[in-house]
View: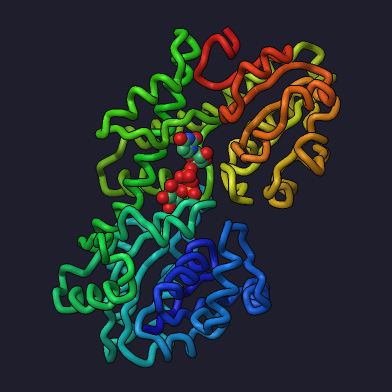
Length: 446
Ligand code: UDX
C-alpha cells in the first residue's frame, strides 16, 4: 500500500519509518526546505534512539522516500496521514489547528482521486469532522474517507512504542458506515503485523478516538502530579514515596507506572495536551476541575523546587556553584520543550547562584532558552568542578556511573540533590555527602 505522511516532525518521521517496515511504501512530505534537504541527504533531524538505523534500512529498501511535492505524493497514494504540529495557540490554551486545516485544504486542492485521510496529529474533538467538511465542500467530485489515528509514542522509546503498542486507536466515521468500513479495511491492512497473534487495533468513533488521546495524556500527567504531591507529603511525615508507590502500584487498578516523583512533567505533549483539553472542556461547557488543578500544581512545583534549592544554600548565594546534570524534560531525548530546567534554572540564576550545566543531548537546544551567561561543561564530571551542590534534573543513565569518590575530588561542597532518584543514598552518605531525594524525609531537608 502506498501512503503519504504530511509533516516530517517527530510523529511523521517515526510513524513513516515504522509503517515502511510493516510493508507500506511511504513518502514523507515536508515543505520546509531545510528539513526536506536534511531528510533527502539522509540526516535524521531529531534525536531518537534507533531511528537513524531504521531510516537507512528502509531508504535502502526503497520503501521510505521524502518529498517536498505534495501533489505528486498524493497522486500515487491510497491513504494520506496528517502529522503536522498542533502547538498551543499564543495567549490561549487552544490547540492551534491552522497547520492541520491548511493541509486539509491542500489535499482538497491537489487530490486527483479518492483518498483515505487519516489525522495522526493530536487534535481536539471535532477536528476530524471539520477536515471532512473542508474536503467535501472543496472537492464534491471526489470521495474522501476519514479516520483518526492518534499516536501514543513516547520520545526516547518511540520505535518500540510504535512497533509493540498496547493499542492502536482508530476512530472511524460512524455517521457514514460505508466510508467507515473502507477506512477500517485499509488501516487493518496497513497495520497487519499488529493484528496477530494479538489484535492491537481498537476501533471506535471519530470523536472518541480524538478524545482518547487527550484523556490518556491528561490522566498520566495527573498521575505524575499525584505522585509528586505524595512525595511532598512523604517528606513531611517520614514516609518513603518509593514504598508508598510500590504498595499502590501493586493494585492492578492503579498500576506501578508514572508514579516516580520528579521536578514536574514537561515535554511536547503533557503540558500542551492538558492545556488543550482543559480549554476544550471549558468551550464545551463542561469545565474539568482535575486537569486545571494538575496544570497549576505542576507549574507551582517547579517554582517551589527552585525556592527549596535556594533555601539549602548558605549565604552569600552568589558565591555558590550548582552543577546541574540533565536539562531535557526526560532522558533519551534532546527535547527541551517545557523542561522543568527552563523554570527552575532561571529562578536560581536570578537569585544569584552560579550554575554549571551539562546534558548529553540537550545543550544545543537549551542554549537559546536559558540565560546566556550560564556556562556549559563538556562532560558531567567537568560540570561538577568546584561545585557546592550537584543537582540532577534528568535521569540520564550515564549520570549513574558518577561515584562519590570522583565527586569528592571535583566538588568543593558535599550536597547532592538527586531529584530523579538515580543514585542510592548510602554510598554518598558514607562518603560524607548530604544526600536529598524527593519523597524521603530522612534524606531530604526536615
Ligand atoms: C507522553 C506520553 O507518554 C505518550 O503516550 C504521548 O504520545 C506523548 O506524551 P513523552 O512526552 O515522550 O510521552 O514523555 P513521558 O515518558 O510520558 O513523560 C512525560 C513527563 O512526565 C516527563 O517530563 C517525565 O519526566 C515525567 N514523568 C513520567 C515523571 O516525572 N514521573 C513518571 O513516573 C513518569
